[in-house]
Length: 602
Image 1: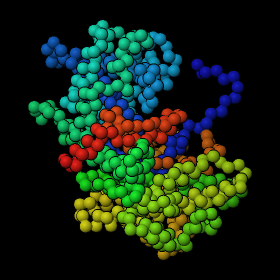
Image 2: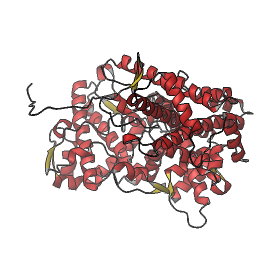
Image 3: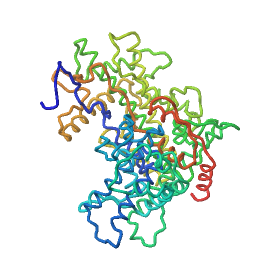
């Protein structure tokens, strides 16, 4: 085969989408809820300048194509010019980010050679991921914040700025006018695409993601949280209604986050410190910070309800995926012992493991009802378990939703060799935490319903949220299942969950996705065979699946506020993921003013 030379036997792991996660098909709800709460954002956006530089590039390409009175633009010419300029500007942004050691930027790995001279084309750089990638800034540019329009059909390959996008384009244009005339001419050229380090140095202030201007910050913050643009004719702004709805929803969610941060800072006496994203996340849902400090929910009730449900859904997914991981372990253990692996056998094994194994510091009740009584007793007079978990240090491992999620996330994926001492106890503990997590979710559903029982509109909103994904185990159905088994042995509940909502749900999900994709890839962790369930080993023989949750977007919403000077941030250390996951925040005067303005104009 041309281009390949085999000098020794080669073994490749099976390329399988099972490694991508979401084995029970539960991720879509988390993403849908995040999309409602922070429309237009994802877990990769970070820098205001990326938005403004792209808007400027698009606007300049269109302006040049229609200059000199040209009303009829050749689409192919515009598409070609737009592609060249977007490649050029995106690569300049990324190259400068590499030099500035900025994280959370697409395509950075292409710059590791650190050459002195480059042709600024994506093909020349072998860059496949850019700022305009659907996983980065494109959704916010086109739909979420509504800055650019995308050509379709006969205008495919072209873009144009909306009135909102032109605000950012004009702000960036002011910065380009500070460049030397020759450098600005080069930046705008579609013919000269060769750049040296020396030339990049002359562009560094304009291409640095660290240095958005005050005009860029002010305009972005306005569009981020308000969305209105003063145009003379409504016909000039066809996406206005959608942009305004998205901006106002983002504002409600951002105000909720900032009020949570302010409540935490209020508990820190005279020396407020930096606050973790996890702490902000919990207080947003609980409506309380420690020391019973209440969060003002006036005007942000819709975002609060959705955030509350999202936290429950994240915990539910972790609990169910932890049970899935246990099913996989039990199947392998039984296969190694040459024991039957039918669904009933796996369920019985998990019933014994979770209900009969004695583990220090945790003792499941004989029935779900016993566990519910314990939780409701420890909830005291707080409106929810989440509020009790924030305010009460006692039994924090069981009351605090963050502690529950952290444990379930941390369930190890590497196979323990030879069933080393303590392995079964750890599996049992994980199963007990998983069942507790599902009971916790059911209680929180009823707590939420009780909080809005006198508000017809809020009740309808909540029931709509709880019914998301009703072809699987939606939250409303989870509450019904827990109530059904309330007075039955805990083992019966475990059997129902494992058989119907873990094993069967995984087989349905993997089967349907494989059939729809039609790409020959395996999506099964285990399969149904004539002799029972059989673990799929290829490419992952010594590893287990692990529980996951939807990618966090709160962090990115806060980082954009930091770029607008509303918050101060301290980043973590180590690899890029930890660098941001460990970020902590503190309110700045502009952030407090934003909160004050929200109170004055809800």
